[in-house]
Length: 555
Figure 1 (cartoon, rainbow, N blue to C red):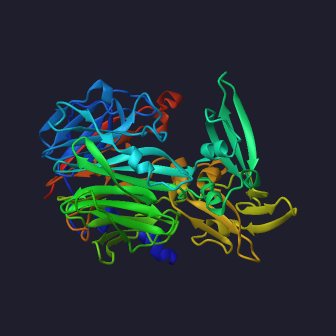
Figure 2 (spheres, rainbow, N blue to C red):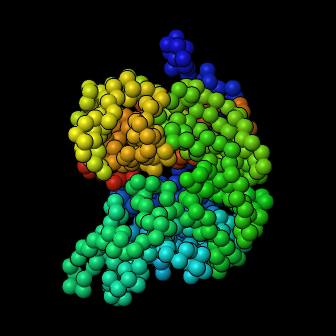
Figure 3 (spheres, rainbow, N blue to C red):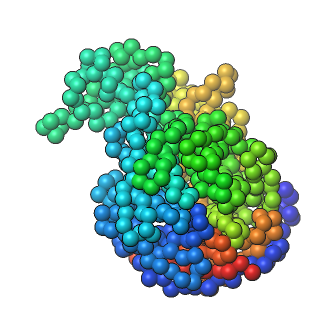
């Protein structure tokens, strides 16, 4: 793209990008403290969730307001014993379901006997609640002989009086049982944790006196098989490894185990003809489909799953999968786009926005699509003006040296005492990866891998988390909130755009908006971000931003 064309794109206004009218947003006063999120439910209603904890790092859902038209809101009672870090809410005329982690427990994780995230259901619109019973023992029987599982967050979907719970699990080698069977540990020993390091396994034991003991065993010590060694792979080196989704369903509060699939669960929904769920795997993305929550089938998705492309998915009530697509690399070069796909059909691009570099908060319903768009992520005030920090990152006998040469990076072989790669600032800031380097996964799951320049074999991989520890967060995060536009479309093809400041009457105030779409209206929850000069620094840490709520009618 030439500089003249790039400048023209950069100067594009929301009005110039628009091919359809915009929504007219009107502020609504809700009796709701500290907004957390809006949820669109399977029956077309919208739930506004709030928390009474204004400054909790993990705000619990203490208040729910429900509307079917955006005008009349009804309080849904939540008893004290359901003080949850809510992860999912859905409802029908017959049933309400909510999942989350109890406040008294960690925000994620659970052992093999007790699921980390609970599911509660109500058959009378919240007047009374029951904790759903999930057949976890049946799910454990679906594991391999050497596997154990830790459960984390759960998503729920409701259609009529049928409930589906998608429980995310992380499977690993059952090291504790392996050590007991090998006579290395007593049966009542408490394994606090373990880690795989090269050709050995480090194990930490909790002793009865409160102390901790560390043990180390080689693979040969434990006589590990190849399949057992494969289960030792660490998520730091392979974030998608070990993921497994367990699906439960039933009527009301009794949920039977139905199936499990290797991978990580993403967006899901109850739709007109059953249930849908996106599954991320090492081989690519797939769609899980069920007509009734009991029988499930897998359908590979026809889309680019490369590391530098991010997909935000949402299902329409008729089961259509809508996807917002953009590059995770600043200056990725293709802007962003909207795609539509039905089961058994190839995906179709319905819209392309060259000026919008990232999309967020995609929401879909009978009233159409609403999404937030971010522009100028790599402008002179952010990415191009940010210098490479000095720093070094050691791993597996290699050292990644930042700002050597100036603005670039060098990979150093510590054993051989010589450089493997030297990349200039131009190579680092380019839109394509240099030879010998590849990125896999997306977002925080992404891994940067360096290959042997002679053999092509993998030398060392660094996770995004490891890189951020040296480089700091990406420029858009470090430079504040980028400009956000709000887009709406009836059909995913024609779009109306306006700035968030114009849409919500915010003046010069920065904000981040989240959306939910109902039958003929949309809701926006807008978090206000105070200017740096008005922020009270440490006093703001962990505090939920001031929240305003808006409703828009479909024209």
